Image 1 (cartoon, one colour):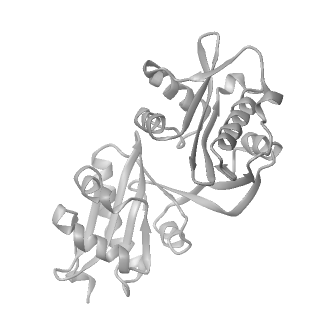
Image 2: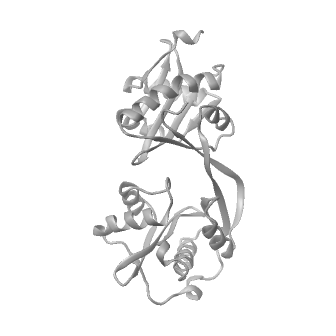
Image 3: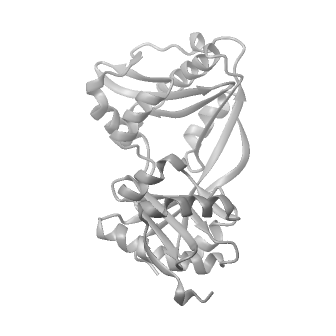
Length: 288
């Protein structure tokens, strides 16, 4: 069917069933959401479909994850529709909508090998890579050998979300900041979020979750002005001990390829790289 007969428009609730069918059948599909989330995404996020009437030819959706930065959450193309053609049709209206709301950048973690090259041809650039690490849970407690003086490990108080957000933004380079909303979600939905307090100020935090036999250290952050004092090792040791108490067998985490300080920390605790590096692609909206 000629492209001229395909209309690209904003997705609506009545499209949900066809979107689900497209994503389930498409050989070229990127899904970063649960299907139960689709209705909310279509209502609040930036979701577009390529519609010919009887068929959906494509679906493209992005969510704003922090001020000025959106992330691709879903992309599906009808089997037989060229990837470059589909993305070239769906991306411009998505960009226009993002720009109209002041969102300047669109980011994608390129887990799917097929998607990175066509995005690069649409002027996405490789900002960094995600490196995955893993190790077996230690047989014995680790924290006793990494205790430090001058800081207290404790849980976060509800009125400290603002301070935790500021700490997170100091600790990580753009675009890796967590928003206050994301941090609240981590606090409510994960197994353990602890902070390090030094003289009444937050100097670090860590977040860990356990599912079955697998633990994931989601975040380890230390104020850059307080690095080198053992805080990172203390937080990481506590996370490993939590994984052991939760009966996990393996623990994983990830970091950015450019973050050599974190990589040295993890390798010093016996973590080893697994899998391939994941490209982090970013496009500045409006660039051609």
